Length: 327
Image (cartoon, rainbow, N blue to C red; front, side, top):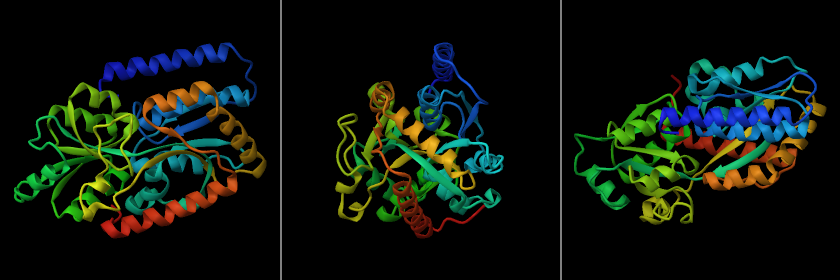
């Protein structure tokens, strides 16, 4: 994910797997688009390409991944919403594109109510990372360092105003009384590239994106937003247990498949059944666990609706707390 050549090679490998998968099965009907509202190489993109081949085996219908980054993911969301009513177009997204972008990007022009969740795929905590030469060994020292240099705030990289990573950085700063200079990027890979290169000081990144990077020693780990220490990254201690003021700093990200709310019910039911079966394939499950994410528990469509409603309320409240304004 960090090295462009490695990323391209990895995507090439996924494409080769796709060719083999297509050759090994008979696919019928028009292909279904799976929109990724993030750049190639982002954690969401890699998850989509794993799901692509598992799902087309279940549907017997080709799935075509289409990257449409930009404007906080709203370009991809709006393309899905503009699709013909009877034609299934899927989108893979997190709470950033589905809930937060409409609150922070004026040009988005959609609301979360227009999206219907079809499947919750994975869940994962975020890891707070710092550049390798940052003169702090743990979160307490990091906060002290930031407090001792108020005229030179630490720089914090994120993937756009109002994104989940942006909110986490702002919430950490407010709770600990430190200042951070927010630096927006167009995706996780360039954030990590600049963190490794020392151009920025800190960022939050989904656990699924950093395990190999942490092992390499190219960055420092200052904590996890999980409630407990993960076996996958034992260096990341829970931020919520570092000091009392951070006791409620427990957050995570998720990946879900959405369709337009206008898609006919029979199409939604068919997709839900196929996607659920795809996510329970042994290979997909093992790949998900190996990446550092946890497969989400199966949910009915009504349970998914309740989950999405609750998440929308939660993140609207977080956005108000941070004072996110549309740009």
